[in-house]
Image (cartoon, rainbow, N blue to C red; front, top):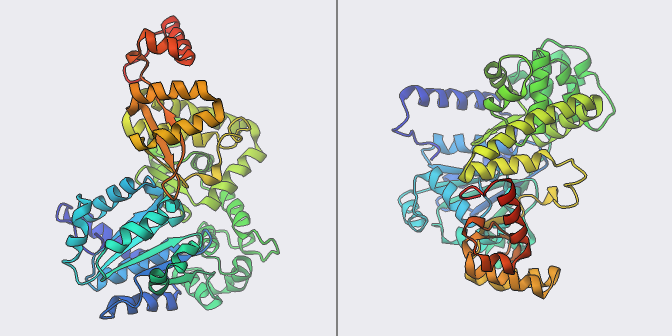
Length: 467
């Protein structure tokens, strides 16, 4: 939990965490009303609201504000836990697993009782747009069971669903705060914290309009020694795009530029991936450099750019040098395919998603995958109660004969079926990963697809166990 030192950590690790928190605190400016609102809720005998809902566009500083909130809670000795929607499977079980890791309370049923031992507790939910499938479950099932002294803070790109305010109970307990760009005085304070000379203020403020990510990128560019073109006032409204293009021009070397392009192209970047995909440079040093960039974030699987930065960097290389783009794609794809061949369990699933994400621009893939809908559904093993929904889908799309085949496999290999659920828990789709090595002659005679797959495997090599 935030605000409590883990006794398992060595003293040096704790000091590094404290130094990181101090450095982030020194760069935090503005948001005075949002800070006072949170502070008042922390100190009130009874919180004036149970849920603080922050929303705003990408790069406006939602995560940074949550960092500041966590520091305030820690300073007051109030424990907290944080869950990032980018780092969890958006299902009830995935959420509870992440919460258990964040709090050290592995039994979900014991959580309310454990929190009763604190006079105040804060639960932070970041990147909430990625938790969209959980919205109804959190509102109707999970959050109501928490003790009344628990304060929940949600941060996401979208305002709360109408159901939060339509509910007579939640309508009184939710405080909604939209986040906007920084005011001019706040922007100037940020530039001072980043050691940007005052004479740049008029140009920088005109160029960024107080957009926090844009301000951060300007400071990064100026830190490289460029004091001319990067802060020239322009009329282009796409501030972040212009800044990123200017920033990429100032990267230390061709290898660093290539690393940025790799990072923008893949779902998450690791040092091992850089070692495979870079054609020059030291992967370890360049990975460390990437981690220090203001628009690079990190999660449990690796590092990744802010969404706006990713879009600009990837589109730039695709337009500027299509041949280099195809070659970079080939190298990265080779690395991911090798992982697919070697991985098992959750690592195999991650490698599959990495490969799927890599082909997000493919005209062959786009008709079949709604990229903007990723994160709006979650997968979990099918239960007996899902059988009718699965059969209805098959019958509707492929006819009664196909439904009879699906009914056969639901009886023979029920564990092979995974369903995809939407925000209300309804079944939106399913996938069946049948174990060919467990099929019989009768199974193959019933299902022409399985017979064809079995014959192919026998001709070119038997199926691996678990394949």
